[in-house]
Length: 273
View 1 (spheres, rainbow, N blue to C red):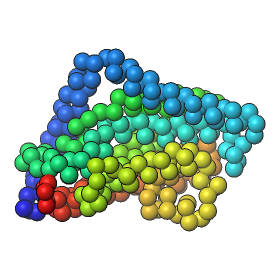
View 2: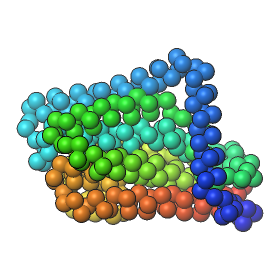
View 3: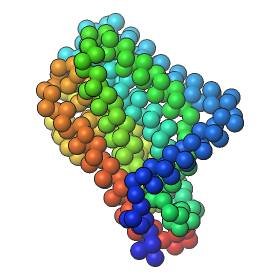
View 4: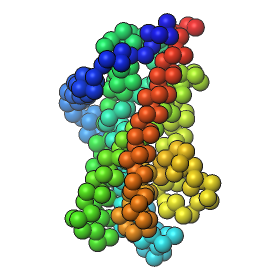
């Protein structure tokens, strides 16, 4: 049975992309059937991040900088993470249901369909709060960019950092949700812990933390490449050479997500076993 868990390697990237896009569009069409729900959830996602914006503004009314980072730089740091986090709700929100699918045996029929299981799982749901989160995050990032005095010449770096941030965050959430293949449970507790730690710690300059934390966040679980490294390079806190690590971290995170999910499928034994 384990041999049937891994999808046919002949599946092309074009086919996989097509399946992903069609499933995502179907979810968006379903959302438009209930506009009131959409606006409530999007507003809730936006409100939480408006409070984050307000907190940073109040903080810097009392202090000139935090570990050498000034107000607009901190807005960019928080804004980029918010965009990445909100994008996971829009692009791969279904992976949060991995634990429930494993317990209920809902992975079974997805393994018989001609598309990677991880893609099918990821597109089973869209978190409507992600629209509000990503929107406010982009506003924070753009306002911080302008306030920090960055020019349009740095825009390619900003776009690279933005894309890689979204890819890394989506991949890491997928990895930690896939833990439910081995540690059974309806909730993706490891992924929740990851996001909670990021939302509380990774919106702060990395220099505030001990060397061990910096090593882990840079080279073990590369959450620092989601927002800290791109923003630090843009604002001159890090050398431009660090930017090379951002796409490499994105590639490593994607490979880890695919690999861990495949290992999970190999160990999956359906419901009731």
